[in-house]
Image 1 (tube, helix red, strand yellow):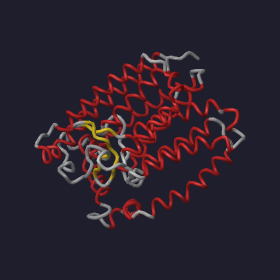
Image 2: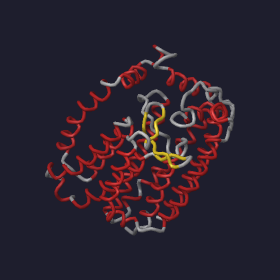
Image 3: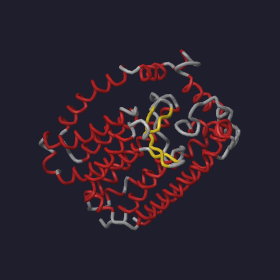
Length: 361
């Protein structure tokens, strides 16, 4: 297990290092245009990295099983934060979404804390009820209600990407814990109409679907972001334009340092650079998936699987969006995209994985 932990740690360090370089490259022009300081986002990112690193090393020394004792308290606190972020004067709005709470000059995203809390609560619930949930659909109701409540509050921000992520992770964990597939199928059937209503009842979500189906039909309107992302990849070729030489980051591609940072990476470092990052993620998940199969603690198994599912889905969706494979969701690329709350909790997840990996078979 020592070798597994070592490889996960070093791959994480490499990914974070790539993120630091790419954030500075992708955000410099935008930061100078808005703040007259090209290193504005880099400095903030380094601060969040420092804070996340302190929490990471603390978690390595902490017994992760103690989280079970606080699972319900974490859920209550996360619900409170999700309610507070919707209150004018407390929640901070940007781009039409109210997802942040101001903490001085920095901001905090409660949905990231809710995601973490829900992973802990779900893992604890599945372990406690493991003998009931396999053949008793009603025993799942408390877990489903808590997930639905948190997902509903996140949808009000609005943030459909994170809500969809939470639902998908729950379904995957239910499959792993041997819940009857008929129950899971019923949950999917119940969720589909709600999902369709959420998508087609909101104009901007309908536009995202149309842009996904054919971005070139309106390349200067609803398809603009995807088109600019594809242009970035196409311009990169095999070896890229060169680090710092992107043209799409010159205010052509929106969210170039957050949701679409992989597009800038592809333009500057080319196919070789994007493949290198993909290989690093493959190594990370290959090593991480060994952990739940090499320990005896069921809570550790469930929690580590939940963490892996969250990070893996975020990677797949983010890269898929930049390539036009999925509709725009607004999920960051773990360890690489700019985003303080996401970076801190990504480090929390890695810290927990390495902590869990210390368990004996």
